[in-house]
Length: 96
Image (cartoon, rainbow, N blue to C red):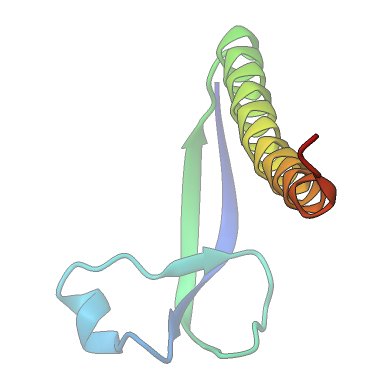
């Protein structure tokens, strides 16, 4: 399925109109004004949509990636707490 809509084309302070003329794709938004960007024209954009099944698979993959990221962050936090516990226990350990 395809959908077509009108949008605005912009360049940022890091690009120039010459960059776009040389083939670099401008930034495309539906907003009429975006801070830090200069509108250089309009665009007619056609989007070919993936099937619902493919979108669903991509959503699941994104969530699984996020889960792995959260698990890694939590493992780092857990390791830091375990290290702090270990250091405190070493300070209070007395040999018999």
